[in-house]
Image 1 (cartoon, rainbow, N blue to C red):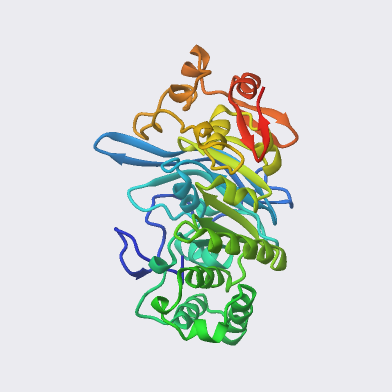
Image 2 (spheres, helix red, strand yellow):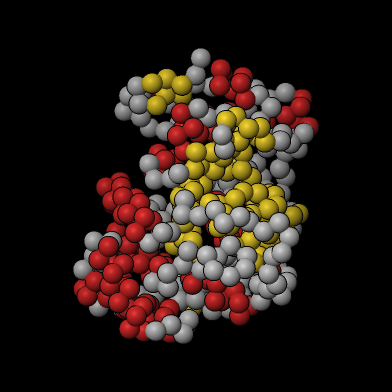
Amino acid sequence: MVGCYQCDDEWGWMLVTDRSHGESTGTGTAVNESPPDDDTIVQIEDLTVTFAGDRGVARVIQEVSIEIEREEILGVVGESGSGKSMFASALLDAVVAPGRTTGSVVFNPRSGEPYDVLELTSDRLQRVRWESIAMVFQGAMASFNPTMRIRDHFEETIRAHGKNHGERMAHAHELLSALHLDADRVLESYPHELSGGMRQRALIALALVLEPELLVMDEPTAALDLLMQRSIIDLLASLQQQFDLTIVFITHDLPLVAGLSDRLAVLYAFEIIECGPTGSVIEDAGHPYTRALLRTVPNVDVPVTEMEPIEGRSPDPTDAPTGCSFHPRCPLADSDCESTDPPFERLETDHDVACYHTEQSRDSVEYTLRDEEVGP
């Protein structure tokens, strides 16, 4: 992720300009077999991320396949530990060592031939990151170098990619203004001189300064108060239309992303178990996990006593159950669920669910939206 400063336990403060710390192979050849159509910007097939450790191989993304449509906002939701952040990193071939990423992530640019991100050479991958696909991490304070002004971060990014300084900085001013910031003041500030919401908006502007087509956002509002979360959601909707962006918004907060996204993909135990138009998934969820997740959402129209946590624990990535990964926690599970992974079933247009008991789930697992009960 050239030009983005990030801090975590393994990397510390560093400018990431080299190849992903994860392991993948390939030379960066174009994709010629079954390329995505013009409406698809990313075609993901059998995406898997594994880590080998003392306890065995941990699968933290398990054979995920999904197409992301051009200029849509895709919300990816799930509990903590479901694999959301690994999914985000895998889209940029940025899984850290000793992680191994397999499958394919075929990016279809507006101009040029489609290519598999996981098959790019180191040099080509550096160009793709931030120019074609950019990422915004949670916690903007950890994403900026505290010893550098915000302007320095923009200029470092522009210089690292060999772009025209004047043109890109003018775009930076445009982006900051679109995000309701005083561009001159923000650019001359150090990260600690800005509020959390201002830092997060400045980070979004930094991610967009090279005009990528796809923006991946990993819990970008998790550290902010509710008012600022809503403000940034509204700004993202505006930016998406203004700059023709495709956005993948990854979060544990289903109500937050429901008001922003066109489609929802629900992750459970490192795989997608339901996907469809946001309205369809929210109003008529087919998977018992999705319905149980909706039942845990705070709702002013529902008494607290009717909110129920999902019993049990998420599976261990080194010891995932056979069959449906949700069956140890599912009230509808039977022997088929325990032995065989359920295929996706089409409920209605573009709404797919991996469950053997969709109709029974709708009848048995109730939840309430506003003042309307969804269930039997």
